[in-house]
Length: 313
Image (cartoon, rainbow, N blue to C red; front, side, top):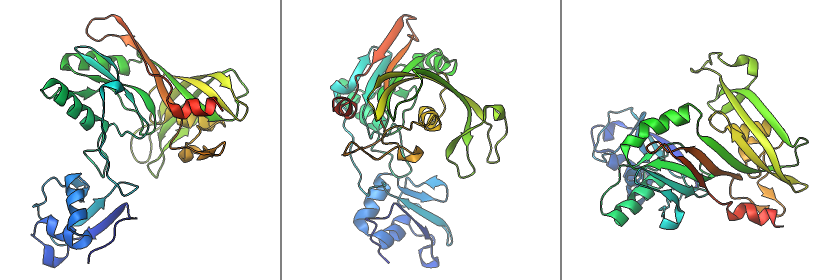
């Protein structure tokens, strides 16, 4: 019954009668082998129906659905954060210069290999006590740059209010395919999920409309400014006025200039004979009032090498 999972991201098992009531580890080991089963349970990649299985000795009735999830590339990695990755810290806040490929939190296949766990581990080793860490916002896996966290729960509520009230000034830098005709352009659309669950844009007139899968179409608003024209691509500054998922990526694709490396929304995987490891979007700057002191705070993260290598060509 053992299967080779080296090229399989997810498989579904149905609990047979002979495994009913037995520890789930027996079924998973029989399906994929002892070593892979150990990895799956250690990283939270085993699901019973819609619940993540935390206890390998948990049992399930015959006919129950077990979902085994592994990383898309089949390999678990350990994320390490160093003091050099911190671009701001005080008694209440910490900002990381997030790197390409870092997941900010758990994925369906891994609860361990993410930024939050790695930062918690680093701060605990440094300070001798586990921090009271909270992520103030999220960045996509391939989006780099400033990611703000709180170290003191007293900062959580005012910071959440600042993000919700759009009083946090965000500047992103991006590299897009082609050169936009305009120096500055403003994009306003609706935003929500399609029937398949993917994020998509809707006409502005449909903002507020109820969606078949639940939720409503919400306003998405971004201002863009061309920073540098490079012939076959451009460096763009993006100023999001709302914080919708994939907003900048979707808006640039709608404008006909998808991000380099953003294959989900039509961007090229290869550019100037260079394979791109992910989309070129960088959270360059956050400016806000400090949630505790009230003083102006500006945090910046320099462009990573994957940008500068293309700009310098």
